[in-house]
Length: 489
Image (cartoon, rainbow, N blue to C red; front, side, top):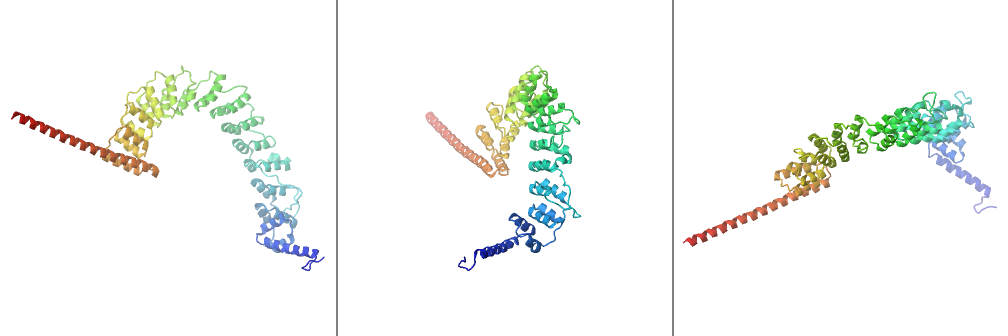
């Protein structure tokens, strides 16, 4: 049967085949050698002869293998095998694919179905088992699983540096990878990874690691410093796991480190089992330095508390600690420097607590400027309302320098301060050059300028009223004098 164009079905098929081949070759010409081979491989290997004879612009060699590996061109690798190109660097390609997580290249190069040639053109009898350190650290689980399956006899040499590799896995909480390597490839021969996992709170890693310690290198009796590490970092769950390996024993140093770092839940847990454990003087000072009032509340009232604790507490940001220490040392006399330290802490609550517990009768001279500079508005308001402090022009200038609009309002409105024109102009200059945002500077500048202008206007009106009153009094006195003089006549 012929169609209207005069061709039968067979002729149409041949024409279409020729036409499609020419189109496909034209498409392949738009790509590089490597890309064109890869594309043809993906779509059926239809142009092998044409690519070899007309498309490739160089003679393939062992370097072409490297190029194909870097570009992940399985198509080029297939052609190189078909052409019998030698591959003396197959080990490097396998290692590269392992380190880069190129599973397709790795499977191709390690498969026994493909015959690779060495530098002499002879088939390679064995395949290289790659080093797995990088793949392990990068958590390439599929690559690791494949290599363990493909090279079961290469496990003893898979890790070039097993100690740092296992340390990294335990630090980064890479438990699935750790389980692939331990105990299949190696055991844990140092405590460094266990200690690192403990410090970072990787409970599952710790539980797995203590089950696979190598008794030929280290004792399965966990060292005390690992329990101390768990307590120091506040990991109660890990501490409980380690305690079971120690037959319920917890060293006193674990309690003391937990106390120093303010882990009250750890301290309570240990004290319930070892009530005789107490913090040292250094632990008390460290806890107060960091404002850990909760652990300080566990201290027996009969225990000696160093004076340095209150000094450190005054520098902290925790006002509750001041009241806890006052309860522990009811007879302690607060010195003026304690209040100065509380002011320098920048915490209004701490400053108020120290002033209250210390029963001070006055504030340090000039402290209002220090408090303004630290934005201690709450303390400033309280001390002013109780009559312990008066706002000054220096305080206004400091509030302008830090561009704190709320403090400027408090000083001028609540403090009833009437600054001189010179002080106001300097304060406006401070606001203008402040590092605060334009909006914030604008609000502060506008308020202060408007407030001063209104104050001047009220002052002029009050002066005018006063002058009129004086004139009226003088006129009244003159009339009375005249009336008195007329009555005598």
